[in-house]
Length: 373
Image 1 (cartoon, helix red, strand yellow):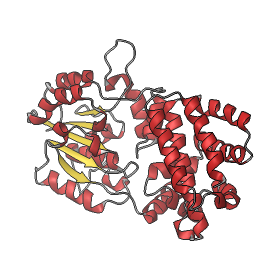
Image 2 (cartoon, one colour; image 1 turned 135 degrees about the vertical axis):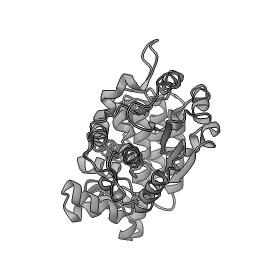
Image 3 (cartoon, helix red, strand yellow; image 1 turned 120 degrees about the vertical axis):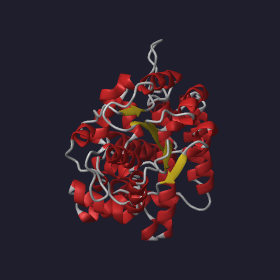
């Protein structure tokens, strides 16, 4: 990964290059910002630049031995660390899922947490960085760098560490080997334990502008400009989200179908069918159920905005718009806040492992009442 492969962020690229050129690279660097902003690509490009044998023009050369090894995710002095799921009593370490991780780096370099959950078959389990990972890193970092000045740990989502893991990692970060660098990438820095966060030098990576997302889709994915412009507006600066929208994932189509079914059956007051709808949604599992509720909140917001008749504020796909044109009038100033509150309460209950069938049936009944408000 070269800096030239990453859209935008010229100021951050320059700052990273200047750090490396002046030998002022901190032992623990954190790139923080929203998902889909290219943070892990920047981390990879920075690691490759540090390892490059012949850097030129503020970028790695792309053809030396080190760069070629980076291009295949096999550089001997680069260690990837990331959240995984624990299986039985076996220690849970990143190396167990390295092939899946390489697949994601290749297919989705902007990183996609939802795809990662699918690749490692996480199901309802939340991937974490377990204490076993801290012990494994400690073991590997005790060896000297092989062919470069630095061993570099590229750590994705440090917010997934639990306290035991953070305590294990703390000594590595506080008192690093002189040939070791940590480059961490976080989508949610507020959830990083303070003991780790306070010991990092931080660089904020902001979301992409809509024009940058549009340009990337047109240039890198050959998307029609009009389609790219529409998707860029919806994706709110996340290229990961934009790519998902282009792929029109089965999950997104399912969520739209479930939302439409809820609203139509609630309007028709079909209690029996809503009971079955509740069971169908509950069967998705906790993580997918939470994602569906987030989707419902977004659709309610967009339908309310649609009533304002200000086109520049609306972010609907063509499929969503086809339904919303006639439905939007039912989401109005009399019920919109209560609808949001209803969805948020359901999300909290599902996250807390409440009975999903009951939660969704309760949501469906409340929707009947609120649509008539």
